[in-house]
Length: 241
Image (tube, rainbow, N blue to C red):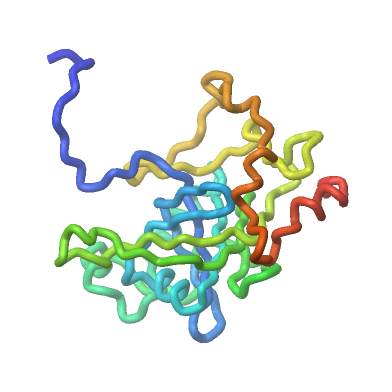
């Protein structure tokens, strides 16, 4: 059989590869929880998270309508691994017990991470993460409505990004509101394994010649004012600092 011939396969998971997100959320007692998430995608200033409906992070997000999405760099695998097999839920669910998860109250100490205060939401940011996004829940959708006995086991949670924090070293020179993709090195989860972006671009992109500001029109409303809406103007006025 030729290696160029397509064959049928049925993977149990379809994690083709997305950045690792460390989601911080607020517990009922005012402490915070950290959970690695490997299902997230962005469009404009919106993000959709794929979450286990029974997780502590999901419970916190649905109760408070807030979270912070902290993106791990490719040097943070050790921190993320320390969060593996941990849960903020007590008692531990039957599903996670079967996968050897243990309840951990203080995940900050467990993972060797440190909190930073957020501007608009209660959950803290993770200082070690090079990019952090403060978010507010917009809508929650139950997935797998085609399977009555599986409906709602996983959720698609749409959040609005209110404010973005990045390390100064990630900024694109000469642009107050752009991230330099040549400097951005996220930790990628692909089929439960960690990867990076390798040695940079494989080729120049034609779309890369479009001014990113031309997309800003989809991120703001003409009738609803949200926290952080004017951050682009504030940053530009301050010279990108």
